[in-house]
Picture 1 (cartoon, rainbow, N blue to C red):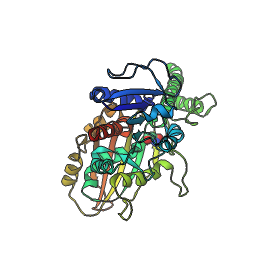
Picture 2: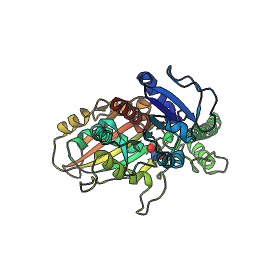
Picture 3: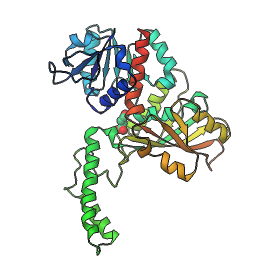
Picture 4: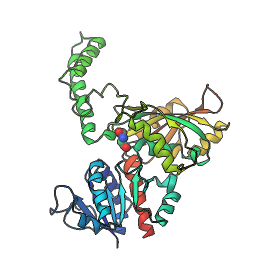
Length: 374
Ligand code: HSE
């Protein structure tokens, strides 16, 4: 039985991954070892039957090298610290990583099995050992528009994102909830007094959000009752890094590298007050005219998780929302219609759980792909 080492299994993405592995009975197929950056030697939590009892040291290159496969959800700083030393000492196992650090390295492949399972299989056959989960909005966009990418119909696409707090980390999610509480408490007090009109409440809440008193250690600015139109650092061309990733990573996932045409993808990434689902509005320029019925069929039949939502108000407002999709693998795509700007322009909107398809699930599938090969 192969030995699989998990690093960062207790964090947000790691916990979701553990839950998915448990639900799909994947733990039965290998022996699990859990690595910790601070608690080595202590008893490991009981996550599956066939596991090492004690926690191992996540910085001990020798224990890490004993593994056939390492799966890390520990983050980029950990990968940067450990990966090259591990390789330098001859680690020849598989390294499956949730962090972005290695994504654009030549030896690394970005895994999104439903989209590029065949390319991943070829990479394994050729001896590649490093596989990295893609950026959440990129993976969710590809899952949603899989049918159009598969048919080679996309000339270019813009994606305007509405990204949940979870994408920024667990502490940010907590901060959003604390901000909501502060706003809620202020509003509650004011509204208890009937002499306060809604504009009085609005002014007081806005003053609170702009005050030093408002909790914003993580986001640095209010997110509750507001939004933040910038995610990650600035690139030289004026994009944010999150926006830059869309084109770079999507084309790498699709195998559009070297002389192959890169599909232009660009947009504005925005943080909103959702908890764990990222949403995106698409403008898609097709390279030929396709009727809307065919477009809907292509999108809806592309993979087992995507489903189209009829472009009507009722179903859109109930089913095409972060609240509905949260905690599920479903990728609903709706608002699909031809746009007034031209016959080849298609509008769409999609929602997906960034902790599942945006992070944990591609890693789980990659682990299974690797295990099947061994
Ligand atoms: N960069 C993403 C976000 C996280 O900030 O929402 C998932 O890759």
